[in-house]
Figure (cartoon, rainbow, N blue to C red):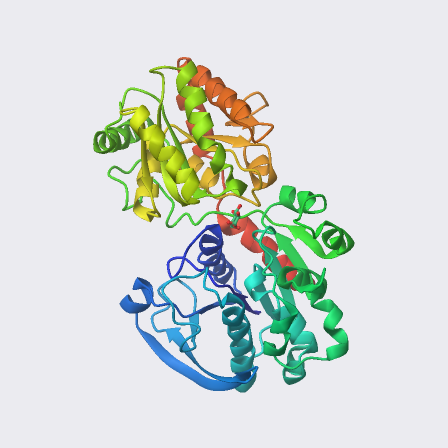
Length: 470
Ligand code: GLC
């Protein structure tokens, strides 16, 4: 079976969030299970493209409105990611340093999708399944069925994976003329509330859609940024498949990015050594429990609550905890945290930015991780944390709810709180502090979570079962 994953992020080529981690790992695990899985992404002017060799395998051109676009398809020659990676280069559109936030984003992603189909058609490549990831490539399930130039793909199955339903890629109808020619009487499939909505298009036209956890699938029927009714009416073709983690890269036993490697048996000493190195670097007290937040500064992630949570926790637990924050995004959130850094020297530290190596160091050093998300389709950070023996303190939502079991339950290994409020988060942190303060508890819980299996093997198979059903 030949499956092509289409996405605008793929680790380590281009990453903003978990989408990249999934697309950079899932295809490799699918290949292990005998599926010929490829990844196709836009070309970016980034370290990865500068440091790797590519060969040109196809060229072509098409009109986007009145503009003629020329594309080149580049294949990474050594398959260093463990799967064939193809990049579509279009001068002035798909050749940028960043992934998002350009004013002509709609033009970029339309060009990407058009070039992809144009290349497949001219090279006579006909995958069995196209697995599209998030709204940027949400027009594909429509175009394969209703674009006049691409009718040969009518029977190619399309699976659409929702990593985040909050962003939908809305565009004004004036962009309609930029799309490849399509059966105009089908325009209603492109429309949602007077706009072209690529996420809605994908859900309407795909053969099946998946969400990155079962819990999130259920939530989308009630809360989907305006698409609740659509998700509900298409529920028959919806599946929840929880993400896995790439244990070749996220493994404290072999991780080259952390100072000291450790496994379950050596976790007590191993984590203590990593913590010592880390605390010295950031001026924190290594004898106190270390709590961390790692992630984008977005309200979706509850990052706007962090300042209040920090104040709340410190005011009730003086000298009982240190906190380290790693992230970037909303500048107001960062400014608020910066003010707190001066108020709590030696107890609160932070790094503002995206830093993959530092993330590994933090997972290895920290005792607890906080995720106060308002929306969390899966959440990978809690999975990475548990693999590194770091206790998750998470809001009961989406994939967090599915993957973290509270210590109050049988076989529990984490702390779950009901609402995304500073009070609920702070009281869960206090509950965790009390718990790990009891003799032997910390190591028991650490052992339990490090032994959980969140590898991709099972989930990769679930995707394949779905492709087979289609
Ligand atoms: C998005 C979601 C996150 C999920 C990731 C990968 O970033 O917000 O919850 O884990 O996609 O699917």
